[in-house]
Length: 507
Image (cartoon, rainbow, N blue to C red; front, side, top):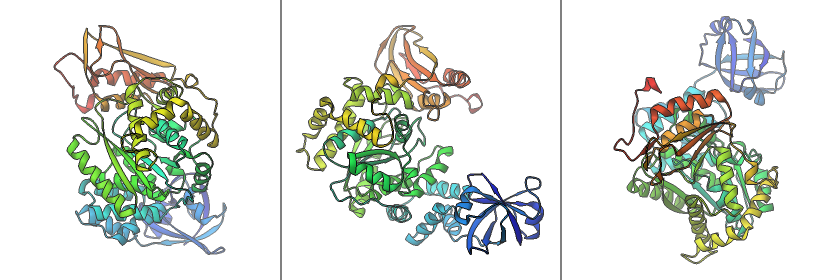
């Protein structure tokens, strides 16, 4: 059928057909069409939405991402015909039935994700099937290599190239803002590509965005790393393992991070940036992704095995995950805390000790320090001010203000103090509940939203002392967080009730 193009600024690789045209072509919502510009010979496949009123019969609405391929103008005549379902849908159905992906099937799926051939619902089906039925190590390797093959790669002349990653699950884990400049200040290269928040209140990319732009091409990341030794950028903008951030987009609303996909996601980025060695932080504890040390060791073995398959030396560190790192949750609050440490603050110890320990492991792996001496080397670099200077260089090369100081980064104007109901000790902090409140307050999208925890587990408090403060940029978000916080009871002061679980209708 010949139709006339109407360009629609919608961020979805699809088209919009009038319902009468769709019926004539025997096409329904969710089916696919092939759109061809006969003048240029360009074609593109797209899934279909239909409408009875938004466009007229004889017109096809072309969404913005699809037109990046077609490059047609408003009013261009195009040929539209039905298209077959991609083979990758059969592969996804196979995993839904608890089958195993082959290498070629995995590559088919990843290519279709990257090219936007699969619809949002179909990608969600892939994510869900992989989450429920899992991926074995062969499937994880296939996924990792497919993610790298369908994107760009970095190639450095100088080695070793170092990388680190935390699997998440513990709030306030702002350690990359210390580790990256410490490692870069030693002369090692660390092109750190990071994700935005999936299940938390702020991913590393969300935090760094407070200080500087984080969206760069792969070429720019390589150039910046070669110039100053390191970067902290959003992987989703680089076209490095592009399928990763597309998959994360569909994990986000479900608040899931499937183990197999998570391992592939982490290692694909390391492989693609040319890392020779990687340190993986695995927080362990209640309310984290990994509940026990036994599970943590099993996951560590998977990371190490996949590293061996890819030619990357991997070491993992199981870290304490039953309390937040430092005292803050949310972009501005976390950035303030990290900058303060770079500027010389000697607290919070949990943030400093964890960052120095992981940086120290990297130094020992790279041969920069003898076994057992890496921590001291990292400490010396931090205390000398070299890490602060390197962070300023990273901020500047990414287009931020290198003169920014911790006190320049402030939380939202609306706040509420949650106070101790009685004298006693804080005997429990529920990490997941604190993250829920931070997100309700607006984090990570509202950079000023978040939580400052005054009294961590084991702290002595008196009735009326502030235990934590909720910050927000919008008053209605703060009110919602307060309302839910009264039900969740994320902090327990010297009592036998550890957690209150309300019916969903209250939340």
